[in-house]
Amino acid sequence: MGDAVLYDYWRSSASYRLRIALNLAGIGYTAVRVDLVKGEHKSPEHLARNPQGFVPVLEIDGLRLTQSLAILDYLDETRKLGLLPQDPGRRARARALAHSVAVDVHPVCNLQVAKHATALSGGAEDMPRAWMQHFIRPGLQAFEALLAGFGQAPYCTGATPGLADICLMPQLYNARRWEADFSDLPRICAVEAACAAHPAFAAGHPDRAD
Image (cartoon, rainbow, N blue to C red; front, side):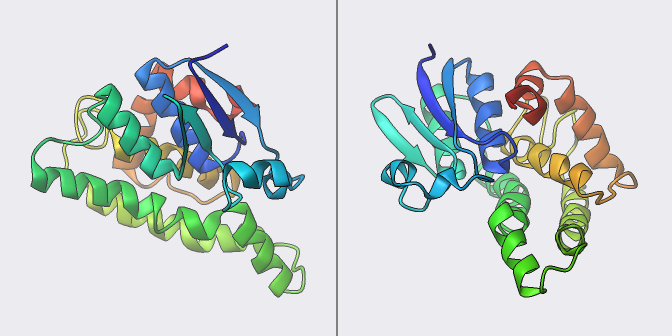
């Protein structure tokens, strides 16, 4: 039994972020699967937890929290994770880097959006893959360019994992799943290697959560 309860789905990018952060904080948690494919996120039981019908939902410290970026802020502030630089300017730039994938790429590449796009296309066989590739690769190219403003040492913005790393790794998982190539983006590839070797990231990987 853990110190928290995480309602998640193994392939959910937002849930993946939370698993990484909880591992970084050393917070034990009980994982409760909400199967998005089966529609369990729309069940009355889950809608009572989160009226938006999204995962993750984290129960911790007597609170029930939703929205992964808001939860990451909470964990950073209460567990002193140091996910963002202290300097206000660098902090804003690091947050923008993280948001470039978490806010701009992820929302159009989630399961619900891809399913709707496929339905609108009349069920075109390759629609989900084409849709994902259309958004993921340009988003990662922009992320690579933004990374040039930071020294990867070895993580996105410094010597310890930060918010950008937590947001990037789930998107790279999706990129590989949908065959959106990023092998020509050396800064991202270097960060990926560093994060993959970190126990908190490895333990949060979807292959471990399935």
